[in-house]
Image 1 (cartoon, rainbow, N blue to C red):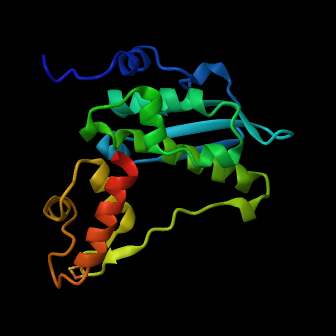
Image 2 (cartoon, protein in one colour):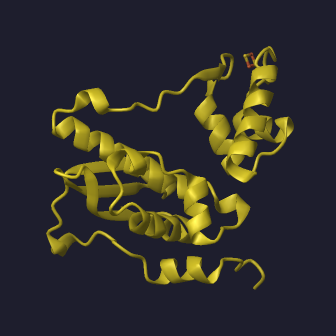
Length: 199
Ligand code: FES
């Protein structure tokens, strides 16, 4: 089978994932994040325990119905973030997870985005529960294509899923298919996201 192109480290984290949430373990969380869509089978839950004196992530658990890549990348992420400050953990990028994991097939990279999105949701949930609402950072999306209602986040996701040209971006998002006025901005973002994630 030549589609089994995962590295040993990816396989190891897939077969023996770390910090998986178990119902009977009695893990008490300080913050909880849930992202994704159960209908697509890619839902992700992340639970964090915070050391409030040091403001660091003391422990975490996660659970997903996602694919092997989502499992391996979230397993690695869950090991990376222990001991990080909340600010450091909030800033972890898919690229850093990939580096730690020793890479994934390129079309699978978007699977790793779920774990860090759920982590940011869990950190925001912790801030909310502990009355630090001023620290909550929203991931605000900006609409780039008004006609088709496509945001910068959707463009970034399309890049992570493999879009490299404006045409491929259009095929995935339908952006630019009405008046075409969004083309310049979309092309700039496309180049920027490719640079951010793959160079
Ligand atoms: S703004 Fe994108 S097609 Fe009109």
